[in-house]
Length: 435
Ligand code: TXE
Image (cartoon, rainbow, N blue to C red; front, top):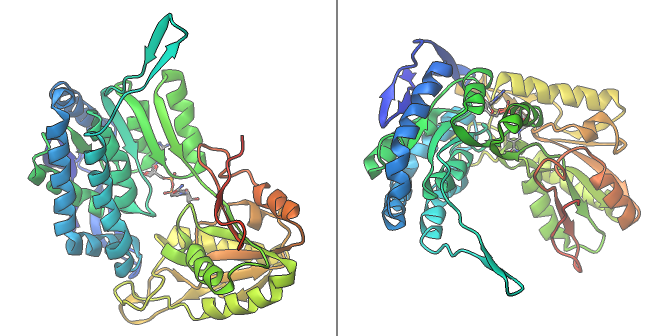
């Protein structure tokens, strides 16, 4: 069985306490690897390594930092098959999606910041004739990066790449549910010539290893993507320590469809934005508001298309959706479908677990689910489900649509914006940020 290890000071090492937990392949519902159950002692080693690497790395010329990061990008691209296999096995998502989206984007993350640092220019502002104010962006030391399971290598590298490009050294923790590609990234960084200690990867549970990173006084900044409640916990710890904080949290995104839209284009987009990645993306449009005069036409066409989506073996190129990331998450999603029925909703399609058979007989698959007949302010329409479940809600006026779209506690607050896609001939996508 694969044994995932921490990557500290340029080497793969066992956790100090010697404890591991099991990691599942969601599409098979079976254990395929073990993961270090790291704690504050492992985080301490990682922070020490990062601190020791910082003076040299922060003084390394940007051209050299850029060269190493471009090499990392190149190695990710060269190893796309291996990385995509690992991502699919670990997360349950379709292999084709890992090859098309997750791994290429991870490569782009390194490429983008490797080139951005070559072209960075500072800003100055004159205050009348008495002063010139200028802005410098300087590395601050050790940075903690904590990422979720839905886009494992993609979001992990999105945090790490800008931090090390700027000359910081990183202690990073991927989600305990999806550690495999992060594990492989360590070797890629060594092969690319990244000096030991610049990136340290500690695996384990959030409440233990994650909390130890957040609370470590030497971690000057924390970059986090994940659940809103976890974000609040991290903010509570980090704020009194005056750490710099980046929080990308939950969403409950509205998709607003007007009667004068380009129907076929809208339908394609809406199917994808609802169910890509099993609906496990913070930008998925989980509440679909439809202008009343188009509602019946939309409902019939949309449900027809959704019924035809293939859910099954992530290795099959025809599978549009794979498995949900864990049994616990699948049960949460099915629980929300039950709640929707209790709240008076009608399930138009899906609504249940899917059993693809064969080696996926015990996998955690849920059919893409469309629900109607719920008020916008019920729990189903207020709480993030983060799975293949969408609701349809008719509206009469633009004002009413915006009121309902913005009537959630998510997204528009919490350091990120809700994406409102106004699929209309006259008004194309609008990014709306509440003041
Ligand atoms: O998040 P968690 P999960 C949302 C979505 C999903 C929910 C839970 O609603 O259902 O979050 O997902 C680490 N101190 N999003 O369970 O628990 C944890 O180990 C420090 C939105 O993955 O927040 C993991 O590495 N770290 C989202 C990471 O935080 C802690 C993407 C995320 O875990 C910690 C994913 C603690 N106290 C989920 N507790 C988006 N916006 O993209 C946990 N962690």
